[in-house]
Amino acid sequence: MLRLLSFSIILIGTMQAGSYAQDRASPFDHDRTRRPAARRTFANGWLLNDLLENEPCFLDRDPYRFALLDFETQRWPVGFRDYLVRGQDDGPAAGSGSGAGAAAATDPSALLTQFQIQDVFAAETYNASGHANTLILQPVLPFPVAMPGLGDFFPNHIIRPTLPIISPTADPDGPLGVEGGLGDLTVLDVGVHPVEGFGTLLFGYTAILPTATHPQLGRREWQFGPAAGLVYKEIPKTILGFIYQQPFSLQSDAQQILIQPIVVRQLPDNWYFRWGDLNWVFDTKTGDYKLPISVALGKVLTVGNQPINIFVEPFYTPEGLRSGVGGDKWGFKLNVTLLFPDKKFGPLLGGLFGDCCCECE
Image 1: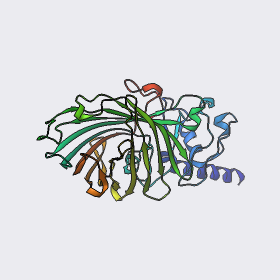
Image 2: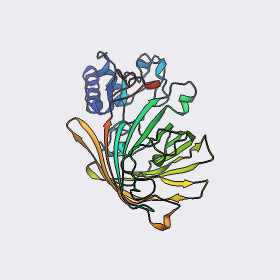
Image 3: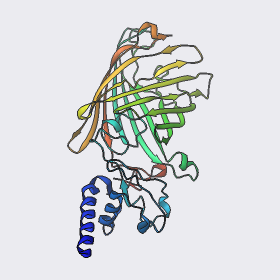
Image 4: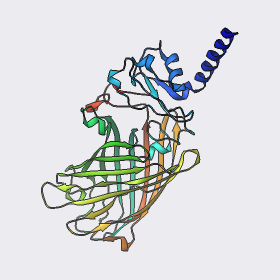
């Protein structure tokens, strides 16, 4: 009877482990000999002394969502490079971070590799008689922070270069005529600091490189300054926050403040509605400002095997929300973003031109 009872307990435990294993663990390396047992242990949330050589790792016993706490991967014989632990959610749009759903695609702090292609059409511009069109190329590249000490506070950082390609400008009848070419390249680099029960804090820098091919297309001065951001994620299906940049010219006394508001509401079937991603611009030298009103409706879908984020964003800047010369009055932005949830990079662009050298799902 005792043997029969022991066998029943073992059988029930094995069946429970199998019901969660696919959602809870994903292998990284090529060693397949230990995965079934390890997945069952992760899924049921036991103390992993048998795998970690007395390095205790506690897992939340919540059957729907749990996290791996207080881990040091470099000391584990079987560690985070062997298994990815993730919580169960309601679908691709329910979580933000490692997936390619709408929540991750609209979260500026998500560790999701992306390549954004945006076309901004300004149908009317203040103090100009023509229309303008700008093509924007913007990769989003997350990297782990390998520096000892700093990596404890910023386990990852995100680099976001932005290159505008302008053609034409909005002043065909003015003294400058029509111009087209490259604008100044902007690089935003922020460390990602997760805050339990809140969301994410971002700290870093912004740099503007003088790549403009004509004075009408950019300031053509080296600029550098601080950047910060806040992303609040505790409201279900909602993301709130902002990104702040303040580049200072290294060649003149010019400086600006750029603020990107973040308000996103997730909708069913990977649709979302959000405040647009256009920056509010304040020129601290002249006092000029431009505060465009913009909203966007978008969806994350899969074409073939490629996840794509598409949104359309109309914008309008009324007279009362601007001062100074120029600036777009109204127009539209179309965004197509290629999402690469399985592509991760190591420190110093490792994996960018070769095999992935860090954790990949």
